Length: 480
Ligand code: FAD
Ligand code: SF4
Ligand code: SF4
Image (cartoon, rainbow, N blue to C red; front, side):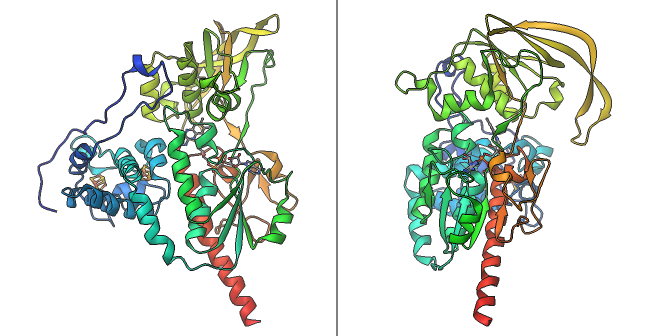
């Protein structure tokens, strides 16, 4: 590409103002137009692929300068520019409209972007999202799929996937592209996992998740919803019908707080609250059947993405919302953009507060008693500062409390006989295979609550390992 002037400031993406967006569940960030995307793409210094720190920071190693360069190179032909860019992204990532929106880019691809030394880092996530959105709006992704599908050489073996979250969907897509027959067993009535039931519409519109899932259907992936593995069918039964199984059942069981009053009415887990709001569409009640009670004063306990999503959802029901976290602001683990948006939307943050009692009246919560905590110099294994109680207490009023302190894998799949599990997580070897031959696993089921792109990376690695495993088995049979 010709030498260009260094543009230090990031081209911002338009966003809806906070006062307007807290009145509905429509998407907050509006994304780039082609013209803005090209301007941002021009800021990329095009570091060589073997050196580019952004590629190293992306868990699935997308050729980031490669896809960005296409936007600039073919700027006079937007459809061609996007098709070329999407082709580069798809080589590593089948859900770019999703990851472009929800990846914690500041800790991954954008963390070490060299532009950060002279100005703002390149807005990689928003460029990725732009490519995926534009491609869908113009049917470019379908065009690309139509070119890929005839190239697929169908194979006789079949693979069962448990769970239609990012891990399962990615493994399914990769295996379908490899020519295997793929069937996903999903417990809920809709595919998508957390993308569908956890992350709210204003951050990740469900039509986008559906669009990405429909691409997999086009590749031949069959999705059986309302199929709970462990109840409707067991892993042993799947192994009789399929040549391999991949477990991507996530970490859907919420952690609870062991404190007096936890069973009072008005206390939700974030899981229940967000599932009602997102999957059951309580924000559209009574148009949809499921209601959700949100009081006037809401306390959300926790400070990860789940807490931020619960708090921002409650705010959209008109509540006064406070996030209470037992550590300090430096240890908030939610994406930077979500924390900024939450603050803009009027959500209050209170740090170093650990809940010790839920106080009720007539069976309903009316306040939460917290012990004040203080930080120590020493850090724990995750690099967070250790905290201790001070023996001082504070009580905050609340008529709704949402607990968002983490989740762990569901026991139904994890308790399969012969499946090795440590600290509630499925154990896999270097090839993503579990202790049961032919059964592979990835995503939150092996990591505990992590991120979308890490789950997708696992799905990809497992698909490769399943392919190699099935090739070896086939060669073994042919030679015997
Ligand atoms: P999941 O997405 O949990 O999918 C597992 C699927 O398996 C589900 O559909 C479940 O119904 C199904 N299942 C479970 N048991 C069975 C069974 N027995 N039989 C059949 N199906 C079964 N990460 C980010 O990167 N960025 C974010 O902004 C972000 N925000 C988040 C917000 C919330 C509210 C939550 C809860 C998580 C968020 N995360 C975020 C984390 C991220 O969503 C997860 O790490 C990711 O979804 C894990 O993918 P997975 O495929 O392993 O599991
Ligand atoms: Fe960045 Fe996530 Fe895209 Fe990788 S997948 S380039 S980490 S936004
Ligand atoms: Fe471009 Fe930054 Fe990646 Fe270099 S590190 S190629 S400037 S996005």
